[in-house]
Length: 237
Image (cartoon, rainbow, N blue to C red; front, top):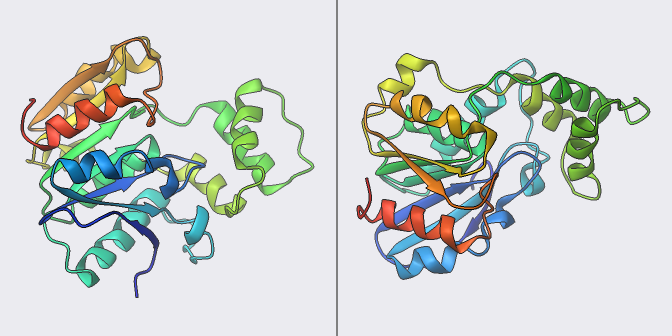
């Protein structure tokens, strides 16, 4: 039995792709990815990260970086499932988990979609407080938008608050130690676009791709999927 809730895709060969969703989502965010990846020869599985969806009941130790802890749980699950050298694709904070996992596991490639390497903004702390206390007043539209993403879902609000405040990328030396091909994908109008080249250069074998005409690359968009699938197949980079 695995620690986390997994959503296995159709068997499509010996190459495994592991898809890691962003904050406030669950493994279902990747529903449109499994078939294209299967056509490309990848058996693609998504997972609900700790505090999210089917993994909401998993007990996470307090005071532990949720991204690093999630990576440890994924490492255990991969070993139990005898999945070797997976290809990791992470969106948003799922990219943090993918990067941490790549420091523990021999992976085929690493893809980070819309990664944000900045410290948590003030509205993230505000939203975290409201997730812990439903009566807390929200002062910014950004915080209200974050909290609204959680309503009506089976997430653990306390753990999601910890993701907002405590989740962090591996240190620059640890990122630099990742030797596999790494792709950073951002939108052409994304405010993070100006930071993306430097972030991608922090990896020993880092590459950058831009999805035209979008700020936050949507996972449902065919253009982003095509960029990622081509990279995983070794056709870009």
